[in-house]
Structures are given as C-alpha cells and as structure tokens.
Length: 494
Image (cartoon, rainbow, N blue to C red):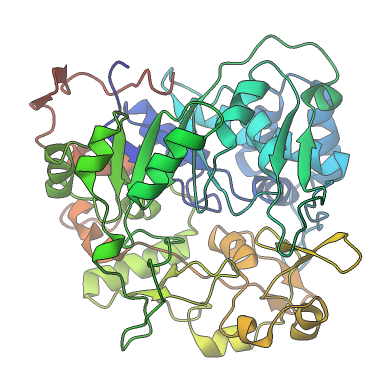
C-alpha cells in the first residue's frame, strides 16, 4: 500500500481539529484530519462573525456549483460580523428527512473545511465523524468527497455501512443509511437517503473513493468490521480509554472508582497480536503523544499512532486561545486534571473533561445554564406510539424529555455538549442578550505531558513542534521492509 503515515492527527470536534491544523500536519507529510462534527453550524457562525480573513469566502469560491455556495453566503454572511450580544441565527435540526436546504448546507460546509485543509500541498487530508451523530452523515460525507478528502475516519459506534456509502458516492450514486431508532419495529422505515444528483443538479466527473479507517476499542469490533462491512475497511485506529472525547464504555457492568470514573480492566485491553493477524494497517491512540510511545507502538507492530491532545493545544488548533492558555498554565503549574465523566454525555459514553474554572466542568457553573437543546447533534431517535420517529436529548428541559418517554434517571448529570463544543472554539450562542454559552473542554489523560513540546522560555508550540518531537528517532527505523525515513505521505489516503 506504499508509505503510510506514522502520525494521524486526531479529529477533535467541534473544529478544534480545524482546517488550519489539518493543513499544517498534512504539509509535514503526516495525516492531518479535520473534525466533521457540526460543520454546518460552524460555517454559518463563522460567516455571521464576518468571515475574518476571508477564508470561508475563499473556500466557497472553490465549490463546483457556485449558485449553491452563493445561497449559503447570502443567507448567513454579516459584513463586519454580528453584534457581540446578538444571537447567532439558528439552523433547523437534522432529522431522518432533513430539509433540502440543510442538506445543501452540510454538503457545502464539509467541502469548505476539507478544501481549505488541502491548500498549499499535495498530501492527503482526512475527516473524522462520530457514528453516533448519524443524521448528517450522508450529505456531510458527500461534501467532503467533493473536496477530495483522502480518508474517512469514524468511531463512537459500529460504522458497518460507511464503506458502501463511499463506493456509491464515488459515482454520485444515491446512498442510504439505516438510522438507529430506540423502540423501532422491524417493519418501520428507518432508512435515510441522499441522492447527490438531486442536490448538485448537474453531471460531475467521478470522485476518488477515500479510504476508510474505523476507530475501534476491541478485537471483536475489528473482526466484525472486516467480515460484515459492506465495503473495504482500509485500516484501524485502536483507541484506548485514556484518549480525549468520548471513550468506549467498559465491557461488562459499569463500575466507578472513588472519584466517580469508570473502571476499565483486562477485558478492555486489545490483543494486538490478533489485530496484526487481520492483515490491515493499524494505529494506536490514547496516550501515545510522546517519542517513547511512538517507538512502543511501532515495536508492537503498529503502523504508527493517532495523537489528539498534543495537537489540541498547539497554535493552529481551533480551541479558543483563552482556554488554551489557561490549561497550558495549569499544565506548567502541575494542577491540570482530566476527569472521565461517566454521565455527562447524552450518548451515555464516558466523556473526558479537562477541569477549568468558569467552565461547565464546574457543577455550579452548569447549574446556572438554561436547560436547552437547540443544536441537536446528539439527540436520540425514538419511535412514538403512532409509529412516527421523534427525537429527544437527555440534556434538554426535563419536562420535555419526560414527555417524550425519557426516564428521569437518565437526565442525572447530563450536559449539553453541542453548545459547549461551539463555545470551546469561540462561537458561543448568546441567549436573550444575557446568557452566553460556556465551554466544556475535552482532553486526553496525556494533557499533563504536553510540556514536552514547549521550548524553554516559550509559552506556546506549533503543530510542527509536535510532529518533530514525536518523530524523534523514527527516521532511522526500518520495519517490514519499509523505510520510514521517507516522507510519510500515504497512498493509503491518496
């Protein structure tokens, strides 16, 4: 398969792994990855902030159907940006039958993020999606493919049907995806459909089918993906429970330690020997952000590592600079702490939270927040008694959630991640001119080790600093007949 990247830069949402970060990493010959989470909301908020630097306009100008790009621009661009205390214009929430204008926006937004990440170099760029966030999958993936994305990475679920979607979209053919619906009956219609030619309304040349990398946490899931996926699986990221963002739940009954964190044990360890026997490339993730851990991964037979936390706090990441500097200072002072919150996420997956004063990691700060769900990316689809599909979120108003059949015990500790993630990158919603959404920052356990990338007397570091540090000693390695001293531009994703 040719040279493979030693480093995959993790896809951290929403837009912490933005186009700037992915471009910086891919230009260095590793695999830069943009986050595909909530890109429709992110694009329109950038436009409502006046498109600083004109980057969104530049991306829109490269979209192959100019009238689609112009409709997005006309609907959301505010010259000079909105007033500071004015709210952002809201979007309709996604549904099984998403409105056509929202599908169009999804296509355009994913295209823009990928095309900007591809500027200035010829190396592959990837995009990361969460399987749990199913409703925008089809238009989002198609938009990324229109921009020439090299790799699709997906975790937080079992993405068996994504490889087949890529096969269909390569020829602009319709693709379907089965929506997970709680309480669904066998004969219920749960199929989402996206027909590219209904959106682009013109003939376009065939697209390059991106490679597919599944992000997994067990041998069973790796085997299942290879046996049951409806298309080719080109590799795996084996992600451990110390990684940031959502973690796979422990196998077996959930148990908590004295801090209230999920307890992982031997059953949660992946047998790398069995992974190697599957015969596909794999990368290790979760605490592999040091030269020593890169060497350990290579010695264990991995192609390389996926690293998120180290890149999340570098200059090019989309994390708001105030939060970035506050957490870097905590790291330098030895007071940084990451908590694995077993209940915060409406997905019910454990979620890593970096503790930061004034953010939603503090219960008293979150208790002051109006309980609202207006972005809806993590909503659960469920079957109503009538047979129709509706949506609920355990972080929405309590009475609303209970009226939809939700259980009272399921709301305990739940937090609105969607609004918090947009606040993390400097696009917080303002409510009634009074309340501004606050951040809730995720990070891997390796947060405390990122000082390794800081030069003496310097308070920031770049993506290039991370890559250079991680690749220390790798250049002279020769493994499996492959000379890793060559640039790691990968035919896996080209």
